[in-house]
Image 1 (tube, helix red, strand yellow):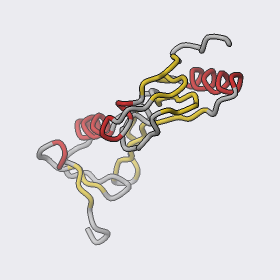
Image 2: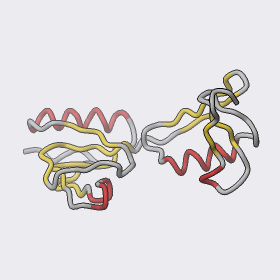
Image 3: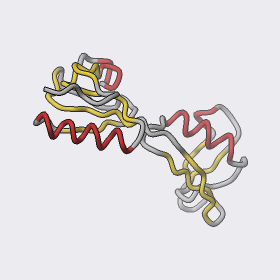
Length: 137
């Protein structure tokens, strides 16, 4: 069997992606930072006869202890603000974390501005700076 393309490694540890850090390993896996690495990982999975799965950067999932598959961790980073009407839309790639997106967005949006999904940026502690508004607001 051919060696996997970088950054894939055998017996890839998924504990950091598993809820409560439970033990989990994939046959192969790695953080895939761009589309060419994702394509190469999917092609490798096809060559070795394994399923190919992508996971986000969060840990809100419960994975089996042994996963017979090639697992890619979404590592493509990038974000931008798009001004829509009187609000702001945040567009982020799958490798971004929620805390990083919130911190970055709050740092760029003006206090009191509203996003297109009904969120308002407000001054205060980081986790409370974005609050949902009711439809009547």
